[in-house]
Image: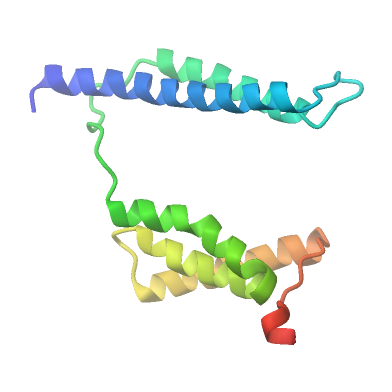
Length: 158
């Protein structure tokens, strides 16, 4: 690949991602503005925080668009369909299992399945990652934050 083509791809990559994030933040900001009460900083409504987050994301995205890319950057590549589907399935798997199985099995199953999105994943590494992340989530969300999420769901406890 010629250096000129590589430089053009790197420059366009920053602009493409900046535009995608600005569009995403604009969509969420417009939704918050039109469908929720914004309020003021002293008396925040339910739309205040989403609107502020969308504004911050837009500003950061514009900043990314102006960052000069490294000349040695790899060109933009397409992600494999398997990896994309596995990562996108994560929230769906978690949402379908959290009530019926509980926090512990839901996190374990979700992380184990999604970890295979990596081309370097092995059964052993995925099991270790899922186990470690499950322990972390149980300790943080169940014990430290005392969130009312049962460790075991209705299918297990009856």
